[in-house]
Image (cartoon, rainbow, N blue to C red; front, side):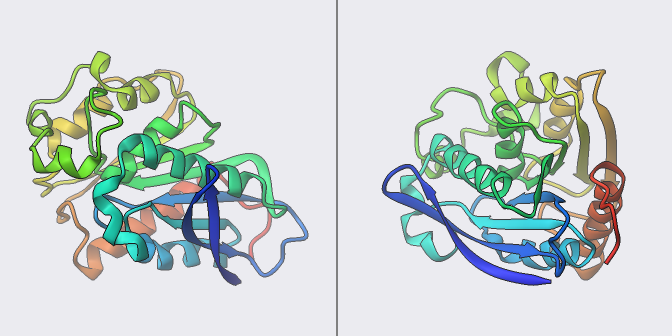
Length: 248
């Protein structure tokens, strides 16, 4: 297994940083997974998950959205529009890697990253989509810095849900016909049941859907048990929906 730090251009003057994990043997093209972290977080929590996938034969990419991780000092500058450009650039980087099998890319996002992963599925072919405790935003103010929206408590509607007409993330899920896994945390007070069920309510009947409840988990997976449960769920899901032709 090889681990490599990468810088991915976003437009002409910006870039995102990340870490690419590839199996030891890349003579055969392999399915791949892009991990998208939550607001105020970074790639750090996903490094062991990406490594676990790579050791089992997948290519995996983690990234730091602009204004996060080593770029945290600039957090207040960036909007959902900006961060969508980040995940599009990361997806395209992964799709263009010589070790990656075309059409076999999965995306896993948590919280804010789950929202971005859902929107991404409207713009790129995602073979397997995993949303853990996905956040929800109105389409209004899409280019407004996300930090301002959070400070202004623009997400109070998460307690009651949101109509599909007001969210491109819900519209993307409604159109999505691939493999879709929604992971809910039973003790989540940031993206509560109403948020999760907004996504569940619009599922496309043509999609292959699974819904997993982590019974002792909050929004942040802050215990070894909940982190392991999440990893086990990912490994099982991708083994079914993005199978590796050979095991390493």
